[in-house]
Image 1: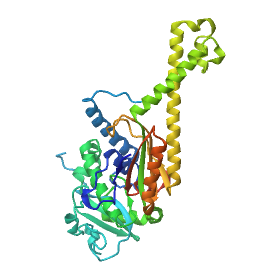
Image 2 (image 1 turned 45 degrees about the vertical axis):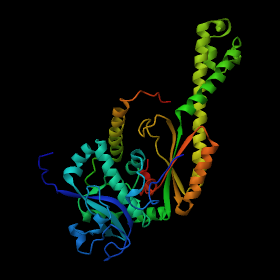
Image 3 (image 1 turned 90 degrees about the horizontal axis):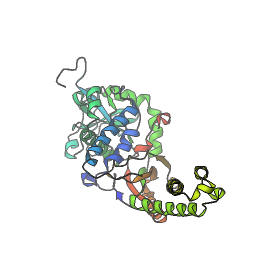
Image 4 (image 1 turned 120 degrees about the horizontal axis):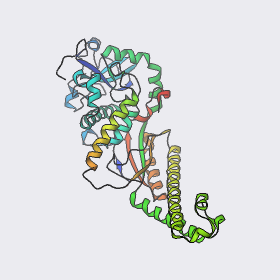
Length: 72
Length: 321
């Protein structure tokens, strides 16, 4: 089991960085959904999908340099 | 990129979070690094306090973090360049993982800093308004929603618990299950009624049982069924873990499982849960996770937190996924 400080435990920027993928779970999919007037066309689902696509392609680029491991 | 954006302001206002009103006319009071605009400053968007830089708290565009106050609420905002954060550049930039990471972490830093002071409602990434006046209008319009959400998260933080069926543990239990099923299937050869699965029976009954091809097919099917069974047991354990943790929390949610490889792991993620827990019960919650990890040794549990209550700050439950 790993314990990561997400917030509050350590003052200042010295706290352990949270994993990007855990952060995106939270900042993209949740939080207050108020529609900013400049982002009307970026619907909430689009925002998640667009960012996930970017993440996945970056992971694939990384994975292609490693041997494949068959997922379950 | 180089072309002008006609009829468009150069800057927008990125909203990081909403908190209860932090009081008038006392720049930075009780809020290190975040300035409070004076009565006149809100309209110009020029308000802010130098402490922002000294504290290292900057907004997503690297600019100062400011406060916009209305309706008994305070929005923590920063000014962003529309050349980077306007609708079209934003859509492009979100495809760039480095950009996304920088922005997400900057946003998180602000939310985290604000959250240390008290109840915070983080806004979703890329909530951008034309100017402070629009932000104030939004606060006024949704004041009841924000008040309810603030009440919900006051004195509470969020903890994430992920459960992985790790590759080594999973394949061990998988082969065990496969073996037991294969042998059972083999033992029941010659008795169609004894075959565990109907498709096995259909594939080859009676006299054909002894044929190697049939036997292979039967074993293969049994293997796959064994794998299914192992998966179901794993899922059931993850459900039990989630239920146990939900009982220790004031609210719970499940995020979709992260795609294998996203976090650098290829293990199967069976649970991506998140729990709203009283601040003073955080240690007890972590202990509960540790106890569950011991009770379900086939699953690897990962605890993250405490987080600002991102997953429980939804103002409109209807838009919740």
